[in-house]
Amino acid sequence: MREVAVVAFAQTRHTDHDGGLSEPELILPVINEVKQSTGLKRFGFTCSGSCDYLAGAPFSFVSALDALGAWPPISESHVEMDAAWALYEAWVRLQHGDIDSALVYGFGKSSLGDLREIMTLQLDPYYLAPLGLDQLSFAALQASAAGAERKELDEIVRRSRADGRSNPYALDLPEDVGDEYAVEPIRKSDVAPITDGAAAIVLAAGDLARELCARPAYIRGIAHRIEPHYLGMRDLALSVSAADAARAAGVGKGPVEVAELHTQFAHEEPILRRALELPDGTVINPSGGPLAANPVMATGLIRIGEAARRIHDGTAARTVGHAAGGPCLQHNLVTVLEA
Amino acid sequence: MPSEPLVAEHILEFPGGYARTTGPVIGRFLTELRGGRIVGVRTAEGKVLVPPLEYDPASGEAVTEEFVEVGPAGTVTAWAWVDEPRGGHPLDRPFAWATIKLDGADTALVHAVDAGNAKALRIGSRVWPVWRSERTGHITDISYFAPEVTKIVSPVRAEYRLQVGGSLLTFLEGVERGVFLGGRCPSCEKVYVPYRVFCPACGGPIADQLELPDTGTITTYAINNLPDPRAPEVPFVSAYILLDGADIPMIALVGGVPAHEVRQGMRVRAEWVPEGERTKSMANVRWFAPTGEPDVEL
Figure 1 (tube, rainbow over the protein chains, first blue to last red):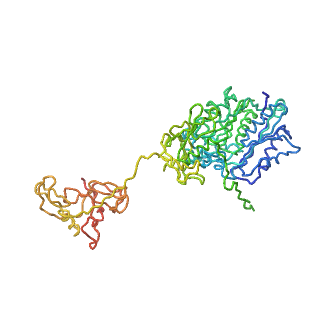
Figure 2: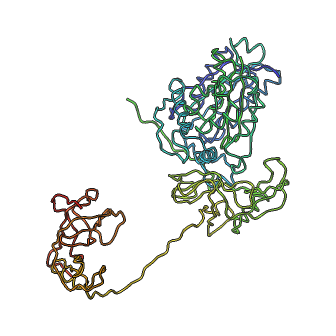
Figure 3: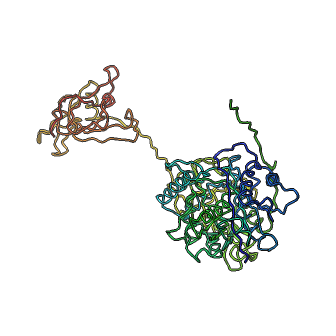
């Protein structure tokens, strides 16, 4: 396997409202930031992750290319998924051996529509979408099946918000978690906030990684697994696909100092902790995680970026980044990063 | 000067809806739904998938062509309570989402449950489908599921004509004049009110009639929180009142005092309706109200 590392990471200062910037305007600063920090102007491969339904515009990712300077033509691809999967595609592309660098970015403005109902559109169109099952409702079904303790969930929310308040890129959410239900058993505070934002990562292989970054975060394992879509066909209390992905990525082959988990709801943290078999000593989401900022389609990529940042700044030697897609943690991607 | 943000409305829609072919497996399920039946499909391993898929999610193998009728009842395996339904939801009143393992199925169906309130539902609850009257072959042909029937409401009403005679008539004639009539047993000397013609303890006749004052003492009482046509408001207090000179207490309403201030030993006096409005009825006494005298040791 070719050595590939995260050598640069940038994210917007995420907002809880639409600032009125177009998507290319949102992306441009983070693209420029990673270009500056690596000194690269062109990349062997470029891949992005976004969702047209967020803006309600077909091929909105194509116009986002304006932020790249895609002339002369570049080698480019896109996933209609969280940009963590764009990073996976870029990693696979780097394994081919003919290129040494890749730019990955993700962006989303979830403030434009009703995210809860936009997420209904990802559901099976015969059995689930016609019921109007929204994102809060299917998440609440998983919370019911998992049956986590309220005290544990409130602590997760308080910790995430406190960490988010000291993260300049995340939102400033109040200490008070409140007790209003969104859809019982999940409370409003258990739900990741509506957020607009973007993020970018540069991957580099071999010698180039060491040239571009003093302390590259090497991808020692990366894998994604998916399970049946229909909620009634799986045990919602568990995440079998996250556990499989974690084993395939080799999470358990060494200590994990920091894990950045794509938890869009508080109850997903204990489910993922168990699936990834993370010990009590692992620090979860020191950035605040998605419960402090959730720019949909960039959130998973940011988990990998945040996990890499701990290695770049020397505060950790082995970290894990996790991303999820689909209803109730249907699809999970796990990355192990090492100094 | 900051200006108002420039905002436009934008709608993404397939006018008239997006037509999808169902394929034979989902099509069969929807056709059966239109007929008022729920079916699953059997996998090569013998499991029954509900709703049916064309492949076994566990192995990826094609399912068999055997369709099995399941349910119609099932057991809730997880549920979530929606207090404020959205426009696209199947019900416009608070309801639950649930995964429901229908009898005979090996997987769970996701649907809505009309349970009234969140406390009516738990994991393990039994639920039954409520069908739409006009079915078209759509997952919403089942309007929703509903909990099992565990109670019914029975109307009870019978009408009677009661005639007052004997000692009660004598007593009510007294009430019409604004006095309480009692009687003393010549044998045990107990004074009964309302007036009666024989002593329930001794069994002997009571000939004596005596007029009792309209003051007395509360011996015990109850605070009633259920409305009653004979009471002015809820909560109201009904009490045993031992009229001065009587040996047996009489039941009556207590008013003119907050319910929580009523106590045993409290001195009260009857509050009569104006003379012109009086009839042969206990309604002549609006209630007993505190006199303000010191409490009596019972």
